[in-house]
Image 1 (cartoon, helix red, strand yellow):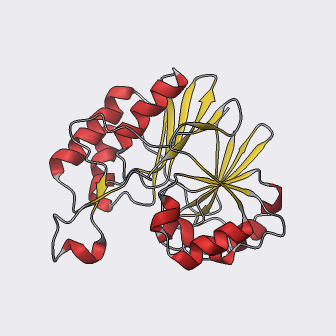
Image 2 (cartoon, one colour):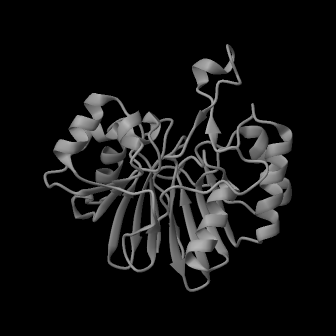
Length: 261
């Protein structure tokens, strides 16, 4: 399995001509399956794919992790000539701006599901993530509300992830983990019946979060003894430092690939 980073907050220092922005987009190759997971904020993901020699026209699915525009707005700039399948939680379609949803319906064959959806026998969209931990709320406070009313949180039932069943365990690919990184991982283990082998993507560990929540999330990842950990996008500086002290994490930028055999 190979994952190529089409957009993250940082660019690789070894590949010229690529650009990045706040957001996430990953191109996934798993056997014969091709998936575009999230599309960041603009058309950068498509431009970077061209520069990397990746033909996005060959994908089988676009998968949206949740409705936030740093993961979905790139759909406005899609360059597809064919009508590909687009998979998401149904609330994504009610929370995105109406003009974006209209374009989605015009450009894509939309599939929405709250239940696990199999893209292939090994690759599964998790649908709605159960809240099972005692420290992750599965809610979100919009940045513009943070200073005015930090208690004005919103449910994020549409926040989901992918899991791929591998020979050595489950490979979890997350967008922003508003559901809670531990909640997502626990559901991935339940659906696949496997232990965790790799967790890749946004873990939603932010500087402004409670130190207790960050500590418990990191302790969970330590306990799970995960072979490959790639925190990206929405893991801030202080939580990243705390992770480094306890975990063997790896970092990648735009243009780099993760190969898992």
